[in-house]
Image 1 (tube, rainbow, N blue to C red):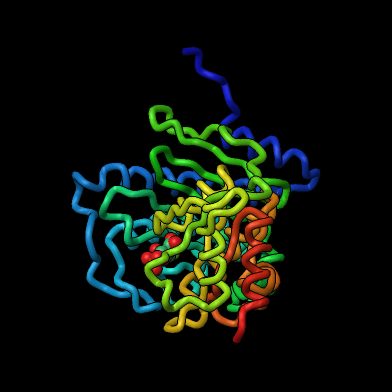
Image 2: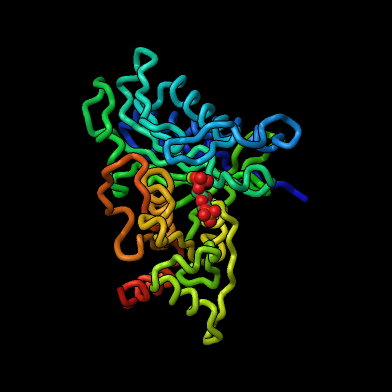
Length: 337
Ligand code: AHM
Ligand code: MG
C-alpha cells in the first residue's frame, strides 16, 4: 500500500504561524514542547507492562485521590519540558496543590502564556492497558510580563483560552488541538516519531446515538439526568441509543466526536459539584467541543462562561453533539426540584 505524505504537526505549526504577521514564534514553541513531552509519556505508557511503572505511587494528590506512578511520571515530564524550554511563565496541574511559577532562565519571566493540565487522565485505566489521555489548556497571562505569575492568571474563564487540546494514548496515539480555528487531529507514527495531520477539521455530528455516563451511580443522579437516561433507552424513533463508557474522558470524548454522542458526568447526591475539574478537564474539552460544532454545559449554562474561583474547582459536565446536549438540558430544566 502506498503511504500518503501528510503534513507533520511541525509543518502545520510553522504554516499557521506564518498566518500571523507579527507572531514571535513563542506559541509555536509551546505547542512543539507539548508535542515532545507527549512522545516521552507515550514511550512510558507503551512499555508500562515491562518496566516498573504500574501501580500506586504511595501518595495522594490535593483532591485526596491516590496517585499512580504514571500520573507522577507524566506530571514530571510535562512540567520539566515546559520549564526547561521556558515557553510558559506558569503551570497548574491536577497533580499539584498550587500552581508553579516558572522563571528558571533569563527569558522565562517574559513568557506570556500559562498552561493548565491534567497530565494523565483516566487513572483507573492506567494499569489495565486501556486508553488514557493528557489534557491541556493555554491562556495568556493577565498580570504584566516580567512579574511573578499570580493565581488570577490561572483563574480565567474558558472563553479566554488561546488553545486547548488533548493527547489520547489509545490503539494509536493522537494529539488533537484547537487555537480557535477549528479542531485538527494528528496521529503519531511511532516508527518515525512524528505526528501527521490525519484528521483535519474534526466536527461533532449534530446528533448522535451514543451516551457515555457511569450508570453505576444512577441512584445518585439528579432527576433530569435519570429522565434523560430513560429517554435514551426508550424504543422510539432512532432510539434506544448505545451506551459506551470507557472511564477515560479523553477516550470517551474522542469516540463521541467522531461518531456522534454525549458524555455526561453530572452532580451526584454525594458530590453536588460533580467530579471533573473545570480548569484542566472541562474547559479545554468545552473549547474543543464548541470548535468542533458541539455543545458543552453544566446542565444549565455554558461551561466556557463559568467564572472560576478555585484552581481545582469541580463542575458537572455535559458535552458532545449539539442536539443531544440540548435534549438533556431540556430534561434538566423540566425536572422537579
Ligand atoms: P482522573 O483525573 O482521576 O483520572 O478522573 C477523571 C476521570 C475521567 O477521565 C473519567 O471520565 C472519569 O474520571 C471516570 O470517573 P468514574 O470512575 O467515577 O466513572
Ligand atoms: Mg483527570
